[in-house]
Image 1: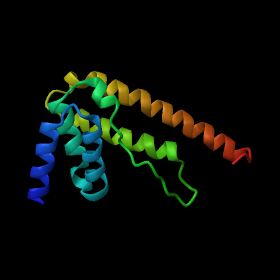
Image 2 (image 1 turned 60 degrees about the horizontal axis):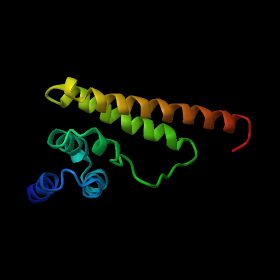
Image 3 (image 1 turned 120 degrees about the horizontal axis):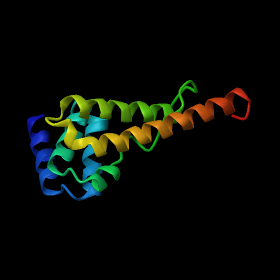
Length: 127
């Protein structure tokens, strides 16, 4: 595992402005080393606190599998909420990341609204 983290650390340092590479790093951690997913989000925004880069990161997989009991927008809101809480609790000076947290808050609200709308459609029999 230490070799993997060394490689990922080097990639984050060498490609801190390359959104495509950062998304690959997030994919690797999210899908293969989930215990490092939040810490690598922290590393990315600590090394490069640029909000524009943060806004272009892909925090969830492009596919979603469910038995029909979960709505994709609910899942996205939950993922973003976990990132929000991790940033709030674990970053050394959370006030430096207010814009990042605001961005996450707005996205969470939008996904929750979308999920509520989808629940209404399901209740009315349109889905």
